[in-house]
Image (tube, one colour):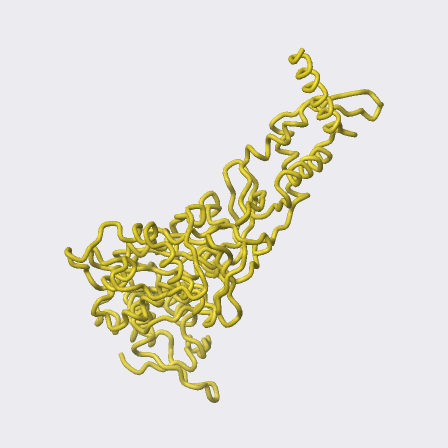
Length: 472
């Protein structure tokens, strides 16, 4: 008797479900509308952006896994409808039709710029840390309107100390990395700002967005642990490792979608001189494509952070645009064996997450007030030294060239004479002859690097106007 009752209940439920799934014309668009209704009923508001369907999970928005999207479509396999002739028919789904339904569902849910301009804040385990225009933080409950796609593991409360206490792992890493460095405090503050930029998703919203390079010529200088510390500040799904050399590949650059930090140990000169690298750093639109999926246009918000023992050489010199998008932080101290703590970067993230978050929050507050990184002079000098050592033209301009106001069409200097003086100086400074460009490339690069001069071609030859060579 009980079995018959249960069977009857199942029959009525299946019958009701079949009736609910009944369609009018059975088109992919009609099924897509029904699937959107089903997804909304199950998850609340659904947004399609950056090539993914997103749902709000209570603390942040999360991408809906592919199988959770396809199964609601499968529910309409066999759904009844009437043909235009009035004859009964049933939906027969194939992989192609399922893909077509989801494609139309994406159009129905599309909000392409939904995550492009979130409020300034850090989403953490204790709530949303909102910053006002002066960089003052306060804590609010999580909310879908904050448009966050990640929740940091640390907890923060108003008044939390941002200064790592003596003896803490964070203090030992910072102190050990920059001990006896005259700019130790400034470099530690800068690293807090870099971590704050990642936590905020603010890297591409700065006045001068920059990819940060942690450089240390010696081993065990702390830079790799800083990289691990930055990774540990964030949840795993907020981090990617797309080397600069892979950014030109749409199958790899798609990995930056929605990420807060791109951390890599690889740095190649060809890659960071590319237009794609510049677009990634500044948040300009770029295109990527997941395998077997359509191309997606998106804007990266990730802070790019690289670690390098040896800085790469540049063929053809360093473009000024590249120079503006790089920030070099030198690690000059080799930490003695008795001061080293194995995996200290990972341990800070695991054992001191609240302290690490408070340190990054203070860095984020300064960053919002400044709208730029506060870069110590030593970092400026290190970047300039790198650029000049790799670009003889830039070095010659820095050492030997001045710009003179142009009056009555002068002063004029023959480009051939300028090139000869450049060659003599560069060879005297020890640059290899194969690094010195021919005259045409020389003229183009001088024009690109020196503002306020002109180039003129006359019957007597080619001339720079307004350029004076002070030493040769």
